[in-house]
Length: 116
Length: 119
Image (cartoon, rainbow over all chains, first blue to last red; front, top):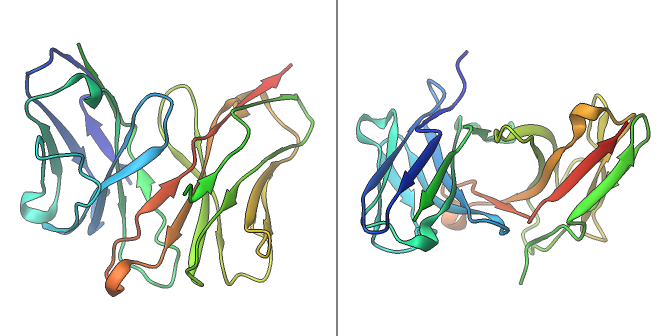
């Protein structure tokens, strides 16, 4: 079974440019999460999808960030325009909807974003 | 207030020895889960072990065990017989019941502990 995949693995852009990150969750996982780790700080929750529906986007930093999950499969996270403070590692995670087991989240390898 | 506190930014251990990585948490929710993840230099996040708040016994997974002390709100990770491949960043995380009965089991992470295993 393929794990969570993310593309690209690295992205270096200039301030003001646009970047789109992609996440492909494990097939059949309805829950998809985006997290971000800024250098030296905690990994922080950004938002949560169930299928194509946004359930909680309370962690999104501001309106320069837009996440979509059309069709309930892969998700994209667009940053437009990028600022220096957006640099960090963006993780995607997916899980099954299962209240019996512990809803283990499977993480992707992350996308390292550098804004110059 | 910090929900997950990992007080050890870095730890060193000799190969084949045991090491304990500390984690304390803060929640008023009676139903919660605690996770440990490993992040090697390659960057991926690897799930190691899980402890539910109602679990009566400490979780174990191979060389990993979780020393769960509910009254103290601590969930320390113990790695026995350390190996060179255990060198990595280790994150403690907590999942609380979703607000409003939804399905958002988002994780709250600590800052991590960088473990270095010396030969």
